[in-house]
Image (cartoon, rainbow, N blue to C red; front, side):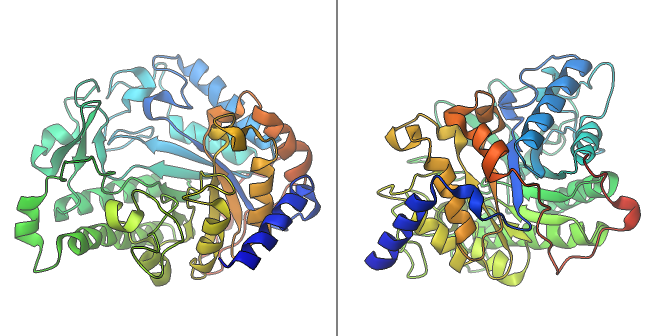
Length: 417
């Protein structure tokens, strides 16, 4: 961004900071992530009764609906275990504390959450972690029928002294087919509006440790460089998943929420003017731009968790970069209310409203997603009030995706009153 454009944009941001509500879009994606891994958001702890779990989710849905949101992105498969009935994977340990143990009295958490979300006129996007299989190999509950016990040869351990995680090996064709079959079944059986992956593809690098896939590279590399081969492994599952989702229900959206930096300009002329220590392309082996160009995903939601003016990853720089690289697909900006109070910038009550204003005034940006749900419980910096009374005071639908088939009338959500 040249100096004039940068300073002009900053002035616009500051001017709009207290006047965010003046430009209400006709349609906008307004969502929050609801994280289940290690009980970050919901359920608040393991072992809650069915009624307690239901009451907590209803409170979450009510809060976000009051704040004007029109979608929830709920983590329903945190570690090769499920918050839905699956023939492939056991009930999640984050429900009851014991993987494979169903809620008592029995209910289907995902069916319940979808119904409650749709009852409020909101979309439900099923957030899946594709490759994480055991969150902590030293502490996690692992059921006797867990896939890591059935096919130990599909998995590798990777981590540091604080935590070692067991991952599916993305190089294996059997792993890719398993993920496709699992998600196809989920989409067929549940009335989801979208399937959503976050930034965890190949894991973030651990200093001094190489991801242990040398044997698979020797077998499947085919003369490619290792980095390009790893990216091709992830490309393959994205292509296959998109095809499977659309074959099952062609109106269901497929979205990715990547780390906020694709590549730094120092690594690639097409990259952003940032200095991120790790990037999607070089470290997570996720070529998001390719997926957008090819139309393999329907939306991208980059996690722009930095403040306006951050020295190494400026929000202004990054929102402009993603606007220029959305290739006709929807772009929803991932925002960070969890950062409230973490430094001087995030003690500024106008930081989040300014970021929303910039997302609305930037071309090719169609909405926002907030991480995380728990951050809203205390109304940090008065942001719940800002959303409810001002920024999202007027309810709007999510933006249409003209390339998708329309949901059949029998599948239409119940409208909120």
